[in-house]
Structure formats: structure tokens, C-alpha cells
Amino acid sequence: MQATRGTALTESAAGNQRPRRRIGLLLLVAAVVYAADVVSKVVVVATLSGRPPVRLLGGLVHLLVLRNSGAAFSIGTSMTVVFTVIAAGVIFFILRTSRRLHSLPWAITLGLLLGGATGNLTDRLLRSPGVLRGDVVDWIQLPHWPVFNLADSAIVCGGILAVLLAARGYRLDGSREITPAAGEQPPDGPAGSGQGAGAGHATRDAAGREPGEG
Image 1 (cartoon, rainbow, N blue to C red):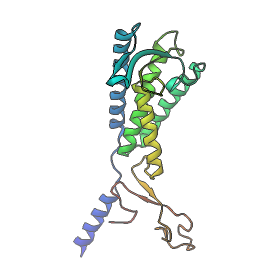
Image 2: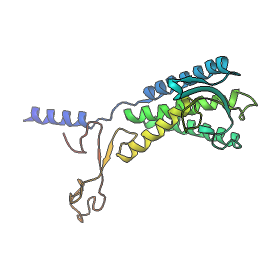
Image 3: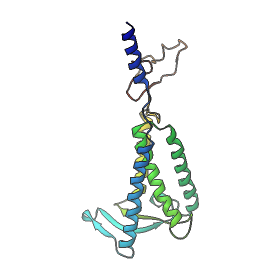
Image 4: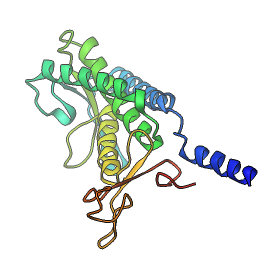
């Protein structure tokens, strides 16, 4: 009896244990994105500056060098300093948030955002016409789409993933918020009982269990 109870308590504790932190994965994804963005810009500037656009895939993709003083996809070209400050703020926010990061999908998402923001911020700081006012190098052009770079792509993909994860209830700490189907009572207790009445939400751990499940 005691052995059985001891086993049950151990399994319950293991099931409720928080997953490990994912800061390393976030930094790895960010480093890969950043390296790919910086290297691609160096190669493009060295090989395509002053040349006509290069056609690929039958004209579906064009490679060229475009200096962009605005945000992603050449938006807000007269607000270079503002976008530089915003990018620095985004990087600081992601790094600060990473202290409570335990979710694998959120680590990938924030890594994409961090790598993309850092890649474009590097251009703002190091390229002409000066610090905080540098032009971002864009070099990929698709039909009916503004010219962009790999950092822009990572930012857009990260933004889409962030919206999807938030909509599905995934949290940074590895838990998941679920909404009961119509007609179901909240897991916290029957409606009107005073225990979770009207809450309509429950939190699951990384293993998919609800609090209290063994």
C-alpha cells in the first residue's frame, strides 16, 4: 500500500514537472538566421552591385541590390532612426522574455524574430549613411511583392507562428490554455460553484495533462 502510494506520488510529481528551459534553442535559431542573413548580404553586395537583376526560375525570382532606409519591405523610408530604436527594443524584450521560456515552438518562433531583428539592426548600425541611419540591404524580389531579405523572411515567419501559437493557447512556460467545447463544464468545477465559475479555461502541462492528473 505504501509502495503503491509512493509510486503514484512519484509519477504525479514527474508529470507535473516543468519542461527544461529553451534559451539555448532560441539562441541557436537566432544565430543561424543571423549568420545566413549577414553572409547573404555580403555576397550579394559583392557580386550584384551595379549589375542588372539576375533572373531565376524563369523570372519568378529576381536577385538585385536595393538599399532600404525603412522597415521590412521598404515601409516607412523616412523613419530610419525610429525603426532602429524599435528593433533594439524588440531584441531586448525577447532576451528578457527568454528567462521564462520552456516551450519548444515558442523558442523557434522567438529565435526567428530575434535573428531577423538582429540582422537588420546590424545594417542600421554599420552601413552608410551612418550609425542608427544605415540602409538595410534587400535583395530578393518576387512578382507583385516588395524586395526583401532573409531577415525580413524570418521576421514574417516568426510573426505568423506567434499568432498561431497564441491562438491555440500555447504559452511560453510550456503549458497550454484550452477552452472547453460548447456545453462542457470548466475543468475547475461546475459553473456557479465558485471554483472557476465562468473561467472557461484550463491549463495543461507540456505532457498534455491537466493539473492534478497523474
